[in-house]
Length: 479
Ligand SMILES: Nc1ncnc2c1ncn2[C@@H]1O[C@H](COP(=O)(O)OP(=O)(O)O)[C@@H](O)[C@H]1O
Ligand SMILES: [Mg+2]
Image 1 (cartoon, rainbow, N blue to C red):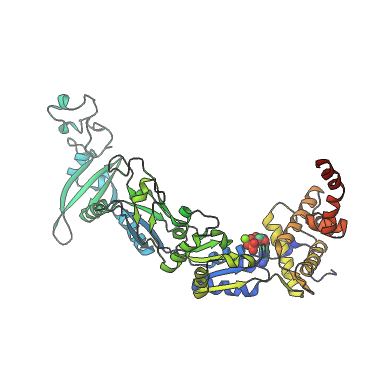
Image 2 (cartoon, rainbow, N blue to C red):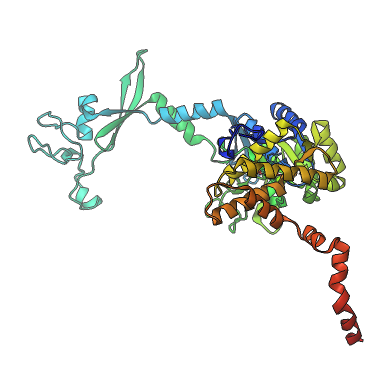
């Protein structure tokens, strides 16, 4: 092989599993991203489009510990329009799961319960004492009716006339527990099995019933990467939905059940990603407050709605903000917000090119392999084709950044070339992306400006030639 790389196609290139390992160049940004993830710091990534700002933000979320808290809104019987917040951690949730399990009771067969209970529930014939199915109305051995005694003498008058007798479902009784005390025990028929609820299970069941009704607004299992780019005020901060019955206790929907979390709450314990931070305009103020307070009330934001009178104070929102901006828009970021990020986090200016070294060429090869895998619809590239793309990266560094002996990190164009060359390979029924396909792709990818420059020598000349001829005549005609 007469190339720098000891491979024949990009198919052989190994791609790191860790998404941060897939970020090419940007060593400083990656290093800081790792610290930010570990220490949960805010991060502002600055640089032109297509150099990996979103990619880095997403990778940080991948490196975070999974969330440990669940947030619920509870009915407040004293003041329904001020629902309460409850934060539960993994332990609390596990405890409750066990509680729910314990009140399911113990399931046994009809033969494993005391005879008098078995008789009442229909597992044993009162006459011959033999076992049978509870769902059968008469004993399969002696034919005696099992449930006759349960009839009321006025049954025909008081109840429906259906021939099927009412099977008793539950038997309440008492038994001695281990410490010699008497306790209540309930046997409940469930099909052909019996559920046993002891005193403890019954008490727990009562406790559970008395718990306030709730709505989980932030579940434990959730995505920890929340994109807030372009969010409206309600999407960002949450809302309380309208109820046409004004939350009436019988026909309406309780206020607590109408509470909706905002992106800042959904990002609790995770990443809130804001691309083009300056485009958030006045919402930046709210972001700033939320970052400072680490909690933010959810209120109904539409004054016409019945939700407007509802407020849930102090809903936690401990997010890590990762924001992106290009250099020109830095000035439109609210100064206190920016100093907040710097004060408890990092600002990083991303690189737009890297030195043309053997290692960095290998990184670019990895980039090409990644883009091809990510696309999924194009074949791998031959090493000659890949080298042609790398050559283009060198030219682009020179052209865009006046950087000699460098390779561009402005990947948007480069990935466009990979895709286009891949599509040409598909159309040509080729097994691999070959060098000529890359040449064609580069030619076609040229921006309008570049195409005009090629044709006329400069954009200005091109503009002049466009207006030169028709203009004069049009103007005289108008006059
Ligand atoms: N530094 C990089 N390393 C590897 N791939 C990159 C890099 N930067 C951009 N890309 C590729 O370009 C795509 C768009 O990049 P993105 O992260 O959205 O850029 P930005 O947010 O800076 O505009 C990515 O999904 C990835 O395929
Ligand atoms: Mg982006």
